[in-house]
Image 1 (tube, each protein chain N blue to C red):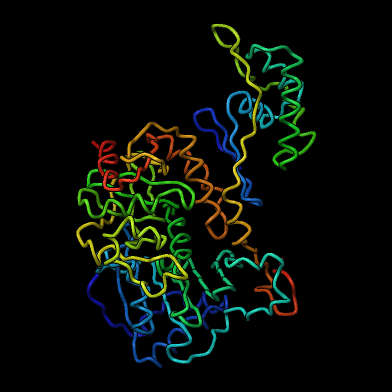
Image 2: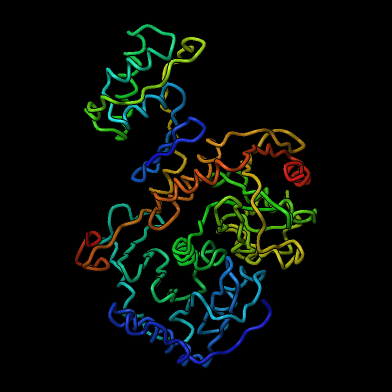
Length: 366
Length: 136
């Protein structure tokens, strides 16, 4: 993804009537207003999980922030299957879209609002919407029209997990509607096949995936979220070329430093890195899925692979995938169970010598 | 919500974020509950498969049912209408050793539920300043 094209705001006309009925037309006009005020309308048309997605931005700084994680995806000339719009209020001092809920006073928030991730979800036959009052981020998808919107007052204040995995909720809803499964897991492999790295946060997925970059034999498809297509030949579709690590882990993974994008903010947040910035040859758009791997941090020196069970693999994959989804996606459990049943499961005992990880993974793929 | 894989039952509680695994006799008991069998039917069928006294098995079944009810995974009194429940078969080479059924509980996802709760918004739309809860 190296070029950008300009498009007229009036080019977006799909489904306007339906949107007006739902009161969503104001979102589109808010985006158009911001683009006009900025004098910019930037479009990237990319191939995401075998379909064309148009990403439209009302300012270049929003585009820059939200496209870095897609830098590895090929451009597409085809008509888009999905068009997403992203803008903020700050870049052109435009008003808050009418659709976005007014922020609640602290006293009016529900008791569980103390957490940073409280969200409100609405869906009906025509669209679904998610508002996260903490960061004040709005995601809306009109699935029947294949159009979505992503707004926040000031993109410069977007949480790091949102710009490391942009449009996460919108893409997970859209992928689900297309029969793909958006999963919580990392993935590395070769063109002929790779592994899905599963486990709860802190289990070593990111460290394992990112450890392979300097070796050069495995390609990187993601460290946190990927899309899967199912059937008898499951396939990993990379969504993001970003990665997140605790800043303290950069000492053990010094090769990653050149790819870190937020080095000035790692006192408060995880280090976010974009793999192509340091390892342009290491990224991939996907590969056939050959095995499920559960990393375990151990006291060993050299990493090794041992047999795992499919039930443990399902327990490592399903709860975090289902519960991280907004709203939770109970119907995914059965799909994930069928996926896991068709694949061998392994435990990767990660040791202090992270350079030994690629050998252990390649042993599975041989 | 639950799923069985390799004979092990994985149960996820969407409300609490806890998830559970049930193996061996526990998985048999869960399948009995799912099939509508009552406590006595479950105990009887386990006795045909596992090498332990009816008293030992009966007490273990009751204990697990209490645990499941305590976790909110089953309602007390669930079951009781499964005359045709396909109970676990007796092994060809005799009954197998019995281990007390365990409910293995995992709470590592609970923080996600506590920190990132999702409220479903009803037809009245987003919460408003005058309200203290989502509109459903």
